[in-house]
Image 1 (tube, one colour):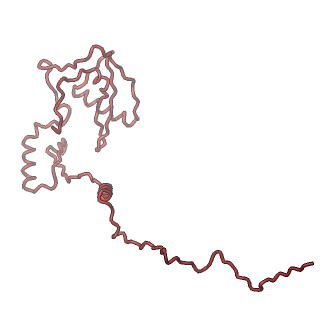
Image 2: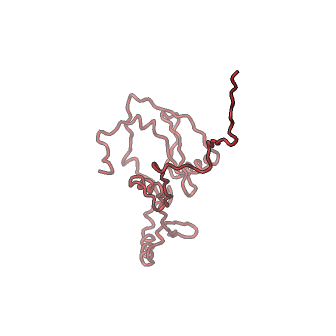
Image 3: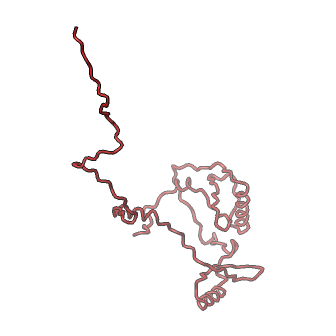
Length: 207
């Protein structure tokens, strides 16, 4: 019977799969990129130009103005002139405005319009377009009061007239102003579709 003997080494070599000390391959070294300052980092020309365009903020031009009353304390007739004008120029301008104060329209009553015996304007309409009556559009109560006030002013000036059963009906479009008032506009899109276009359009503004 053969006996097999086995010798064990009391101090075997340990294999460390994750050595603490890193092993460097000096034949194929790895270069680490140096940190760059923001000042040294240059962007391509096209990208830099686009970024500069985004950084630009266009501020609205606010001209300094001065309010001048050409009327009296009871009936004020105010105009706005540039506050940066020289005092001599400003004085001559105010004198000129006061001299011709009667040629300005200070209210609707100052704009009577043309006499219908002289000229009457009529809109040509296409025969294949039937009249359109827009449905009434509701507005906020505060806006409705401003619309009523403007309509009353135009009614007192004689700009408006009452018509019964009109073939065309268009809604009022109120446009708020910066001073809190309302600009009265009308939705005439349906009427514009029924109006024939000019054979020779207006010249372009850039031409």
